Image (cartoon, rainbow, N blue to C red):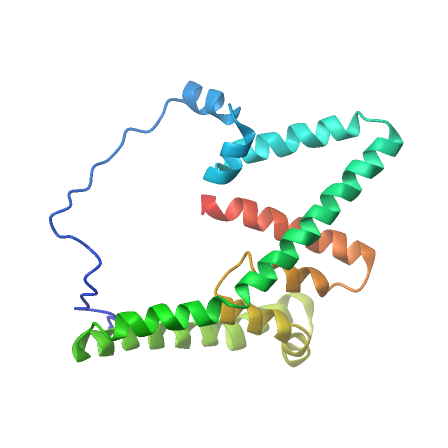
Length: 203
């Protein structure tokens, strides 16, 4: 009905490019491919299956260490995780500036019809997100937990603003993990957030 972005030509796609479909790998190839030949290459390439395999094997190996070594290894991974979260937060704080520069550069090369079409697309997306965030989501929280929607939005406003401003699910991990007040809540939040991010590429 609205057709946001219809007729937009941003000049990013080449009409002469032909898409080719690749045959899916066999089950044996997938199983063999889970074991990385180079663990560091798996992390750089973002190969989720290989990363999960290495994480599981590392966890098993740590469990088999002596208690003192296990504690030291767990502490080292915790420090590394906190360091990455801090670096991600620092880098993503500059993301709005970079997005503005890219948007300004693109807008300078588009005609008025393309700009209006893009604005309709962005506006439709923002309206849908606002309806989901401030109406549907709080209503589901109230129906499933009985918690006040206003209280829920007030206590999660930092996470909501950060997620909307960065448009990154990875960047908002740091703010999500700061919200829980008890150790049990922090552990549950860490488990849920980490697993959600690991499973996201599959959906």
